[in-house]
Length: 302
Image 1: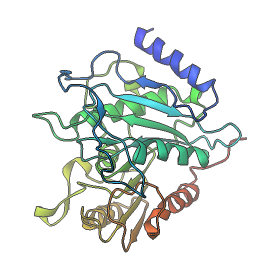
Image 2: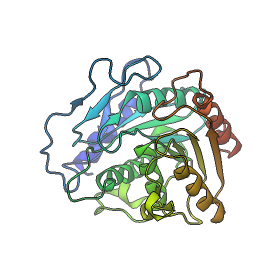
Image 3: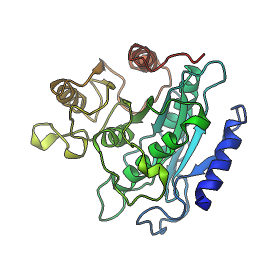
């Protein structure tokens, strides 16, 4: 057995055997050595937030930068409440930083509350020089999806019921993951032999889905086909990213006959995560849970 695979499997079994509590679970390394093409010259990985900078719902947030060692952190659904579904969580941050709590750990806690196992992806940022903005993150996301399917039995999840949720740039990453059939790196182990495309996706205030200068044509890396998985989208009319990116992407899904549910709210801007405010858009988690249930992804295990 591959030494990395043995080590990560041991960590996984330790996590699965422990009840998830307030303590942060142990992150699992995604790659046995350095990720593909990684030079490791970014400097220290750290929170780049400044005091009182950009509070959301009067709370600070973590803006993690200089990520060169991607990880996957597993939040297993509580026993007796598990639906067998799992969701890969992709925080946003413009492919520059990762909003690790606002669009990461807090999302995992919500997913657990509705019986869904969550897998928080810490992918590589910022953008690598000479590569597309999403190139390295897509490798990390594909690797993570394969890992979840390879370890579905140990995690107590259905390998055919693994979705993805992304926020802003993380939503673009999620949509790219849904549009890519082949691995964007050379396979390493059995994780890379399994399907990397999610079974469903949830895109929350998505960015980069369309090209404004080309009449909002869908970006090629998120091209929609009849094999694109069912999709849930939430955004606001006053989002500075422009609501058109969600509208035209939804139209492409409709034309391909892909099941889609779109929620457009009047106000709320961008980057609110799931922290509740007076803005109606912050009720999107309720709508997303209803959608997952209506699509048959939240079947209570017996």
